[in-house]
Image (spheres, rainbow, N blue to C red):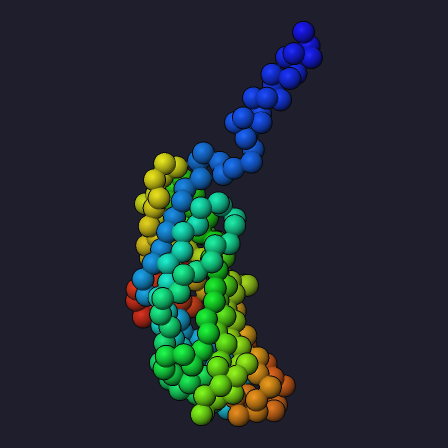
Length: 195
């Protein structure tokens, strides 16, 4: 009888998949639209503001704590620099985000974004700008519930950016191939403030 009860319990666990999927109280959050990034932390004579850009992407964070790939539909620098040219096809862009949503609707998480230059008449290939939420974070609110997908509003990503390049036209030799500073990305607006 004990063996039969144990077998029934194991079968029940296998059928329900308990503990293998997202919790029933996880709030799924999605975001899309335009985000504007502003950069601080000049490396003389390289002004960080030359990196400011606008991007459009969508992402849906289903399993809490799991990074989801950004579906990037647009990217544009505000300024041409020796590191990055403006225009279609001048860079490749990739990224991921995690949107952890509490039952109260507060959103936290992580964000990673990378811009890599493509060879153009004014820039070399391989200059890489990375954005992370190191020393920063994700903030915003979601109207989702444990049974509905919410939409992120008042979204803010902030943290550290790093630019690497072996091209002294991009970064001065004194920078030894790396520049860094802080950034803030605002959802649908030019300015915002981290919490």
